[in-house]
Length: 204
Image (tube, rainbow, N blue to C red):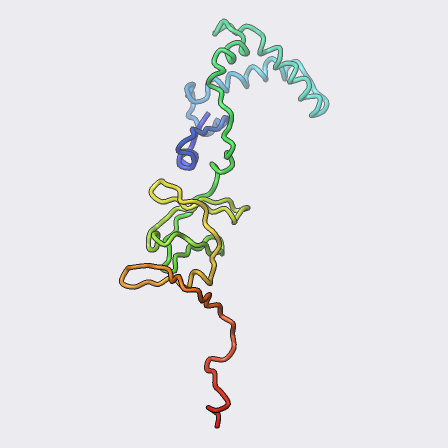
């Protein structure tokens, strides 16, 4: 069982760890690091694999499931309990995974919000709240879901960012460090055309 700085940073409210066999990460004779899991593998090799010779992968799964069922109900010489009984006695420690488990594995990117209150991520522009202009923020995101980019500042979430709306973004006024949004009704939408408009009378 191990955890990483990534898991601890991504899930400050939920303790996440991974159960995995990683002998290369433990020093030799480090029983506190891998003793229990190594003992289990030794039991499987000595008691199961030595006695069964499965012909297919499906046959292996079927025989191993039956063997594990017997193992879990056999009294252990060290604990004086069966593995199943010992597990059930601490069942309150087993908790279901959070519904947003996938979000605990998002990537993190540091960005400084530009003067036009945008941040760039993976070739896309997103709008950040006006008060974060010039500040460095953290963005949590999934590469496969660019529509859900969450802004974090000082350990607090400020919701999900939306893609840049050019018509709103250009109306932000910035003067002597004061930022405000022009509430005018003119959408200011660029329609293209000539720079200077003349009339027929001007041409005469």
